[in-house]
Image 1 (tube, rainbow, N blue to C red):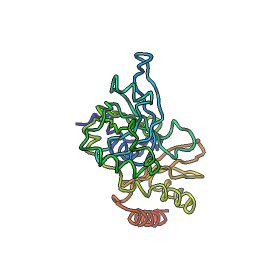
Image 2: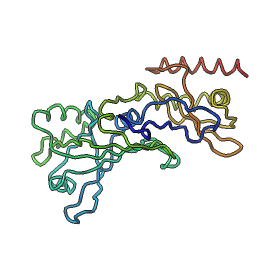
Image 3: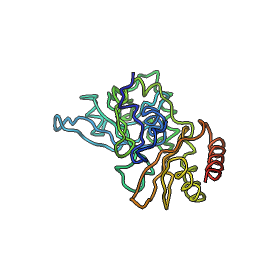
Image 4: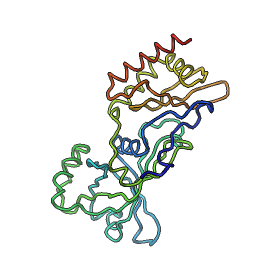
Amino acid sequence: MTSSSSRKHAGAGSASDQPAVPEPSFAERARTLMYLARIGSLSTLSRKQPGFPFGSVMPYGLDDHGRPIFLISTMAMHTQNLQADPRASLLVTQNDAGGDPLGSSRVTLVGNVLPLPEPEVAEARKLYLARYANSKYWVDYEDFSFYRLDAVDVYYVGGFGVMGWVSAAEYDRAQPDPLADSMAEIIRHMNADHKDALILLARIFAGIESQEATMTAVDRLGFHARLKTQDGIKGARIAFLREVSNPAETREVLVEMVRQARSAE
């Protein structure tokens, strides 16, 4: 079972008299971030300086269980470190964080990085090339091999005051959010064309008066907004009226919520 910390709602910064707003679990959010990102920071245990971590920029592919796959050379220091000790961690951060990076999402997978068994190499090769087409120029070099990180634990941070451990089993069972591929466009559209609507939604559904409102994240259950108020910057989580599974349903529910909000004024 998941610990209570990993199910914590990311409502930090919202009005204190508002109930917690449902949102995807940390496991789902971690899987979504891993799905959307492409590059992480791999920390291995240094062979040259025993006990010290050694950081490397690391592109990765992702299999159906959310396990990162690396294509690495025996000449690389991180590969040599892994051959001596497979224990490692991979830190992945939100691509389009903007503003304060400490307020953005990130996830750390802690586990063992080992060479892929030969029967699994063909599928890994396909997955990796789908993300990194240019790797076709060196994927078949003799010194390159596929490795995979099998997580033993996962730590997710969703921003200030929003963090918790996720078990490897829960991470394995989770799936990326259905809006993962479209969330960037939804956010861009709402912030560019519907600023007044976001202010209205924050006032009616979150109980916060603001002069400016910016959508910062969206998922199947609702969205986060950063609000400029007389008392400074605040964050709010606003739930959708119902769960959505695609951009069309998201647009439909947002239009319905704006209509309700206008009627409530």
